[in-house]
Length: 127
Image (cartoon, rainbow, N blue to C red; front, side):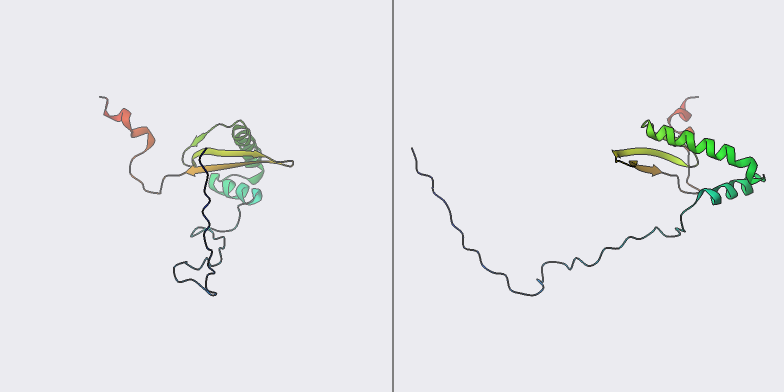
């Protein structure tokens, strides 16, 4: 049998203080995107929908609540949502915790005034 040899290396101490080749990590803070306002709560959502539809908030409330229930059930089932003009919602991962289910999603939205649409894609060249 051949003898195995071990290599010993000498460890040298680094000089104290900041190293010029390593960037300063700095402090990471959470930021909101430009133009982001406070959270949209259910009460405000109902008022905005009622104003847009020129209806009473009491008339809009059952419809909005039913829509939120259907969307919540679809997300719980793992379905992708493609709801223009809201956008396309695709689930990335889901984690069950003792008190809730945490779902990480991506939402792809068209930019306002973007040319073209999903309906005028590859099917538009057939005449």
